[in-house]
Amino acid sequence: MKKSSSKEVKKGLLPFQLIDKRIKELGDWRGVTLAKVRKIIHQAIPDVVEEWKWRGVPVWYFNGMICTGETYKAVVKLTFAKGAQLKDPSKLFNSSLDGNIRRAIDIHEGEKIDEKALKALIREAASLNISDGKKTS
Image (cartoon, rainbow, N blue to C red; front, side):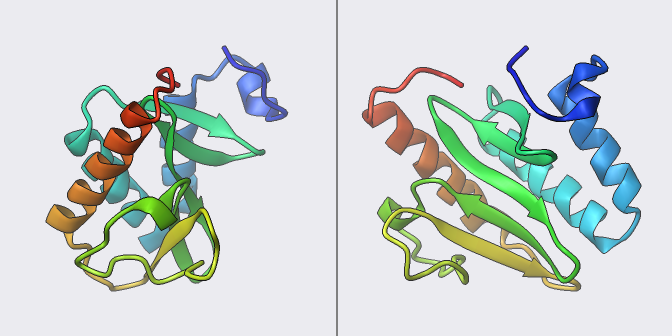
């Protein structure tokens, strides 16, 4: 198991269990949204690796980091590690647009997720990781 400062990881919970726990604890639209995004990520890349980092942030990897899934009071934020290098024809990125590396998608309560476009973006991020020659996770 990877090192983490999270007390829960030290108690022996695996990353997928911690993400399950977070979704349940949120108990509102944010938990539902995070669960939906997680499902989409797994559909896009069945071999994706889940991690739990930075005191409670779900992170998805495939040959390098794909994205994080942060939850805030007003948004669920998917931050793509190499988002600035990704094509986004559906204009999903709506946050962190001025950075040189990352791009993010802020999902607000009641917003519909374009599953097809999100899957394409996730697959493109994984492909970029593969082309960069990085190892899984």
